[in-house]
Length: 243
Image (tube, rainbow, N blue to C red):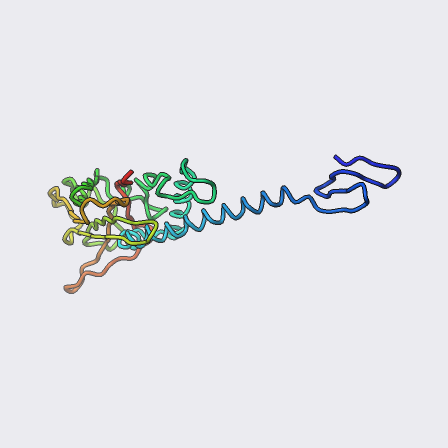
């Protein structure tokens, strides 16, 4: 706190300005230095989150396309930042997703308007076997007309599974996908089935496995995909962080 000497002379700090006994004045640097470093650290970690988000989208490109939410980029970056904030090992500014909690993505829906569970009312699940690289999406028996919420004009649909190992430091990934045949949207029961992806065995990178759905209209011998953001859906079913 500055103290007054005589009528106008001040000695000390007032409002971030330092008044010296010799009459000189300067700005207090300490708080600004801390603030600048915090800003630099935050920017570094936000950049890490943005880069990691792009690598996730690239690794799961089919699910990203199938889900197609308008805010998917921002929503993935937010979760990446949440994962970085859970890194209790690294110093501020160097926290990263690998030492954080990538398991936060388990259950993530690419479309913020429609979840996979609301489109297809069956218990879809996934199994990841890291030692062999085999990833599976398990689809129980269901009846399309009862268990699938489809947009108007739909005659058929198919399920798309995708798995990827992603190295968030180098950006390298190994991605595989599998899909069902075109399934008619009618009252004919569909037997249970498993979609299998074979990734590199014994990978130490995080592994993501998910599923999406695409709707089609069959006309004059061809299947035409129906692009309807209110019904685009894809979800990450399981994450194996490798930690």
